Length: 131
Image 1 (cartoon, rainbow, N blue to C red):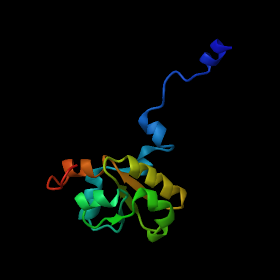
Image 2: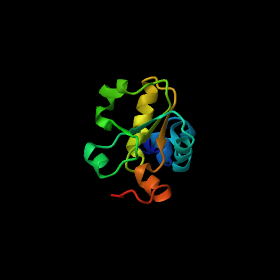
Image 3: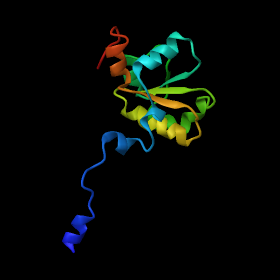
Image 4: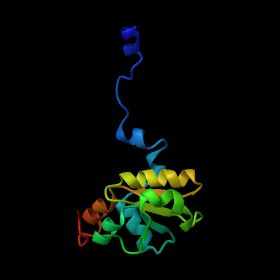
């Protein structure tokens, strides 16, 4: 019986992208350079920070709306579903979860900032404090 069970085990674990994203990553992510283009072009979108209040106080991207990830299920109505939403966190993991949650709640265009505010600070705005 044990040898039969062993044969049914997967040969390899899924990649991080496969484990987190049930759909194509392009559907859910935006690179820092692409976000910078949106800002520079004056495109209409909501920049949503899903980190905790203390993290937001350390550093945030100008113009961001703060709704910590744990509060998002009850506060998502504060965000306009008809407008594109770009979500970010510290390194990009919570924002992936938030993007997927918002998609499930009916938001049509939601993307997570790849690498979060940390990558944004490295690639776009070196003046921002990193933690």
